[in-house]
Image (tube, rainbow, N blue to C red):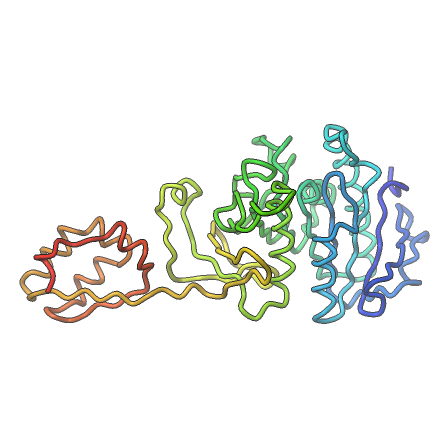
Length: 351
């Protein structure tokens, strides 16, 4: 039952950015001490949940908290359930997340009773799946937003959506993959899923002593940086992970912004590239202009049709057929390196 001494909630605001206030909330609203804290129901609320063999002071989630409080005043609640997730008992932690999710749901209910409306839950690794059990316990109410940071893989290969984070858990669910197949799930879990550097291995992690932790922990680090970065993390759509693996998703427009400021109407799978060291954001992908010149108006249709499969990787061929006239250049944003490798017209077809 909740409250549980092993599931604790702490509040940070701009008035106490480094000194958390313990928040007592239980099944009886009268036992709550929220009114005695710096909590302001008018401010946006973030609830941050850590993962396995960890606690609320894990460095990568501290970065998330600090980046938020750099911008404006938030209610930043951290959930500490560390007594219930210690190594080597991963199976025990898997059992306990249902209970932790129920306690977090009770916590959200107490917040709603104060008038809180803008509630955003952020879960890392095993904590990402706790958000699912929160959502199940809160029904029919639906959380406004859930962010999943590299949701854990072990124990979550299941077709049952109520047993793992999925898009039905909130009005908007955004998910970030950095260590798929190893510590994180590969399947799409949200309305929008971002696969950073392919979503499996992260640049720069080979040099780290804790290789697997480095890849997994990049998800909260990228998200933390996204809160205040001027460059931004930008991604382009890809129909499926397998199409990406087979080289079918070169960078292209349109691009969307990833992270805290993601468009809440976004949907689908997106690929994002980063630097290997912080700051990780590289900004919008800027392609290169490629010009194709045709010898004559007579040749252009035949050439475009003959090479339609190759050209369509980089250009809208039907649009070219409609627009291009003899000796007119066609410009499009493409990746030159990819073009050199996979798109070559016969020399005698070009000027």
